[in-house]
Amino acid sequence: MSSEERREDVLRAAVAEFAERGFAGTSTEAIARRAGISQPYLFRLFPTKKALFIAAAKRCTARIKAEFERSADGLVGQEALTAMGHAYMDLLTDRQWLLLQLQTYVESHDPEIRDAARAGFADLWATVGRLSGAPEEDVMQFFAIGMLLNTSAAMDLDELDDRWARLATRRPLD
Image 1 (cartoon, rainbow, N blue to C red):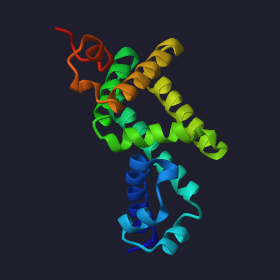
Image 2 (image 1 turned 135 degrees about the horizontal axis):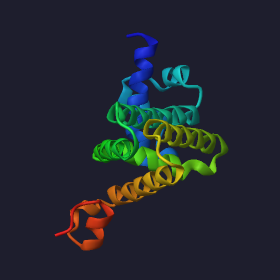
Image 3 (image 1 turned 180 degrees about the vertical axis):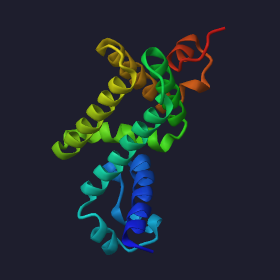
């Protein structure tokens, strides 16, 4: 297996481990074990645990961006925003990606992680604006609803049948 293929294995393992345990709670030994490599080899691929965390966070952002681009292809305005919103809701069904995204925000007290998180968020913001051509107010509302959906998904609000939970998860009301 090439070093690039190993790097991809390590990134997949890192996404899973960091999503589940966060930055501080994840050991590089656990990531290496999950990836089927030694810990010293992990550090040949990624110089530090923080560099690996940032790479995993960037992978998460890239996945969201790719889904936005795929779903909005050929659409503009509200149609594009709606398509990207549905694509994002589909992404939230994979708790691993949701939790990694939230872990990235939690770790934003660290300047390097914060810079990476900001850059990723800025890229997503620009992507939504570019793809939809929507006014800034609409892009802002898109992201506000997205953060509400993140919170709702993290707490599994879709399991509740209360009116407020249905609103928070954008499920139709009876």
